[in-house]
Image 1 (tube, helix red, strand yellow):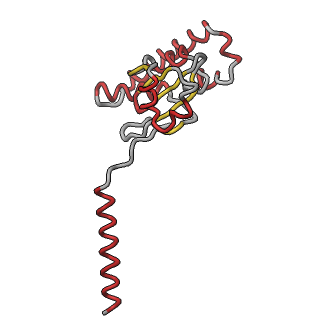
Image 2: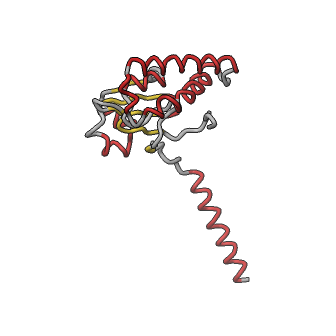
Length: 172
């Protein structure tokens, strides 16, 4: 009898904790530092899904690849010093933003951002808990699809954050 009562109380306690967990607010969307930045194809897929709610067709993917080849090679012709940079492979082969990427490199790969900000209050709101680390070095923030936030100083990207969100992700 006593054992049955204890079991009932234990089950009631577990049920109460479960219900309390369901009623609590979801955790705030805290962005996380990401070591590797967004890729050009990832942004292309995300924008296509946002625009037309479908994945790009074979022809659209081929046209995008040809356009990216043209952009990357044009940028490299205009900036031959890029070959000496450590981030050269990420730019040329992976088509991916990395720390140190200049604003021109980011535009060549990802196109224009959804939003740009030089307002410290807005940049802090986007970075949330990471603003303490970034406020002394970040002078501008660019917001891209899929929750990507790129922070720049005078030379290039100093931090890449990504807000957690569900939705469409490009497979490797």
